[in-house]
Length: 372
Image (spheres, one colour):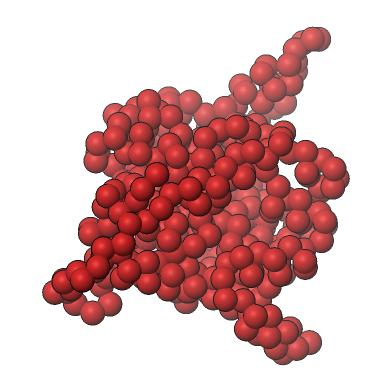
């Protein structure tokens, strides 16, 4: 059965020449429950749509007859980020509950990412134990963190990540509560038996908050656990790992993050899954870059589906990009092989885009290459 599954996945991979092909195949295979979870956005899904449309509105301005830089072969896309030498600036974004898409879940993603030398960020809500995921792939070394209801629980989760060999924390700051997700509600989304947030099991528990009559479950309940800038400073005090804040869209917040001395930020609207009508990530990127003025690395996610999108993001000031849904599509279609192929396609497209815009190294990717 396993061999048959591999053959089937290989045949389907052969039909995929773009990330869009993987998306179409994956959406035809996922059940309604998983499809609503992975593909849906918040409310009317405007931000979800804008993330993609904003890239489409940007034009590239090719440069021709460019002289080739003298460099060591194989180094054109190499970059250094958070103390690591990376083969390329394409990173696997944290996505929860990947076993919804494939039985091997995060293990398969770690294997596929490792095969393409792509750094992987493991979600706190991984359906695979963090140590098992790290063992499955050498690039699964960055851990996405949600602040837990108590500092004791957060500290315990950080300690687990450190013991498992993770060397960076990516703190998600834009989702203290879930967004209004109509698509999930219509599908009656629920986690099936056997799939859950295994890394949160056994953490110290806080007593439930007793809300007075008439109190808001959101504003008086969940938001009492919402992370603050003070929590970021506290987190810096309990770990030596670099801390990257994911979910920054306001230039003011970006500047404050730089003032606090975090390692970096991710310009992100949570894939359009939290607050609808937030600007597309790529639309706000130039303002964030201008405000930060080089004080820390800036990553971006949201809507990246082509190598040209990677080039546009770097030209507008990002140091690297994160991709989430396309990786899930590859996972759904063909497990680790599908993940590897998705990342290879994206990297190949990126390198072609570099060549056709006269860029022989990443530092030649500059704002004047982008119009619009």
